Image (tube, rainbow, N blue to C red; front, top):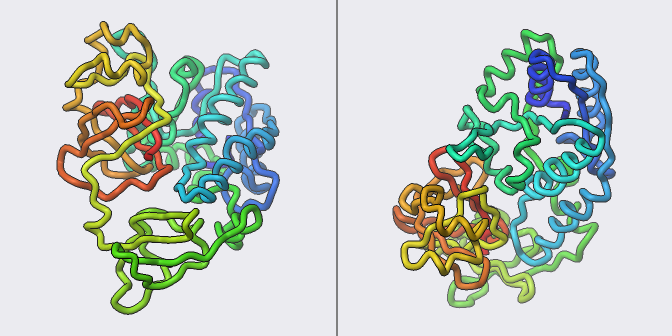
Length: 370
């Protein structure tokens, strides 16, 4: 229970269904926080919601794991000029790994959360992750990393509701969280201090040159580590040089290359660190044997009925991005695949961002842009 309306209603629905429910809030971040489930106010809201529902409330301190698996990689990614997604890593390592393991060790059947996503059973009896009913609030993108073997111990009680329906249900139940605004920002970065202060206290930030495609200097930035591919503002440009986009970030060389929107255009994206849904390995048109290093299991090669046809795959490059059809090829390095944009070139995906693959509403898998 994060202290928000979604997890409060999720708990209420489980209670109404007759389950024995215990509310749990994870204490993840030990520093300043003014948003997310780590602030004192949010923990108090979760405790009050649990009391209103007549269930016990516990706080699990996973701060060391959060630092090691979320905060430290976030900082290191900026040090290397990548664009990290800490919410995905929190789901990967904390909510659906450490928390589930703790729940099982304590004798619980599993973990339910307030995520807007659904779990469905496919024709082979496997639990599969799918989009939530409210496409505008769908959170399946940040959940693609959940281990398929963990899905039998997970519930998403509000996944079949729209956000408006969740708030209406909370209102009928008299929950204080009914009108509470959604949390939008990274929980360990405060609105008052911001990303620059957070990173600046952990790594050295370096000034850098801003150049055009021919290497001509156009300006300077205070910190190359804070610039991401596709960024338009804060590039130290003026006059005719304004309106450019960062098309490449070279932290080691202390240089940002800028260009027009067309300079960001790419026909494909290579992704690594691949995660696949059970039974959803890719079928490659050229030679399926070349895909062995990225398949979930060897038997996928012969289970043609569960292989994903390329012409029905779409890729989504941000939490609420516009899914686009893709074709899939073996990538340039072992353990990577290359996704080709079928409807024409698109803006380059910032290295470090996740790209998630869907077949209709089902999550097929995903990886991190190179």
